[in-house]
Image (cartoon, rainbow, N blue to C red; front, top):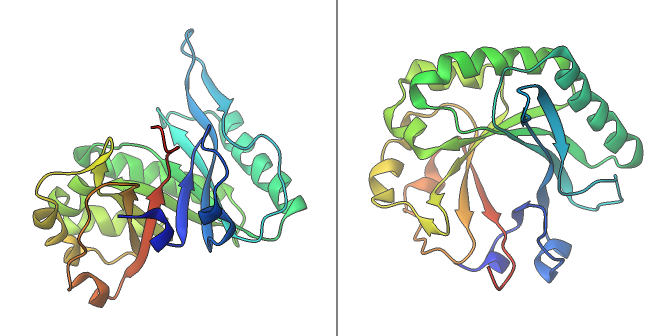
Length: 215
């Protein structure tokens, strides 16, 4: 697949400017990584865009999360960062959490997301990236529980630079999802969308994970 054929992108640290970004409708912009430091204390480590800047595209502020054992200070830092961006841009849709929650841990993850939802402004959307295992192995109740707090899930169809094996088997079970969702694609990966996907009432399109040409 070619990134230029899509209009929404994940923009991670170190990815250089390119024409696709200028014509994008939506950008998921990495802000920081959240997790324990060497001493075990939870920290927000800035990555990606370090300063708010003008954008014509709709923006999601993305946090790569290694632990959801957040302190009040972490919740406050995310809310403060959102306010900083919104003071400079009216294009910020919301916050996306990128956390690889195990399928068996979705109940705990849903409780964390509900707490985060309560700390964010009412007009700030909350989204998550998701594993394909969620769509295929989680119970409908688990997915619906996530949906009570989040406005969208972006399921990652790839591992590394390639589409996961047997992707059609995973996608066949996406029909159980009753939360708005997109599919995340890896730039350059082999991708052939199933015909039934476009007819899914909760399907909202694609997000492409951009890479530099040499990567």
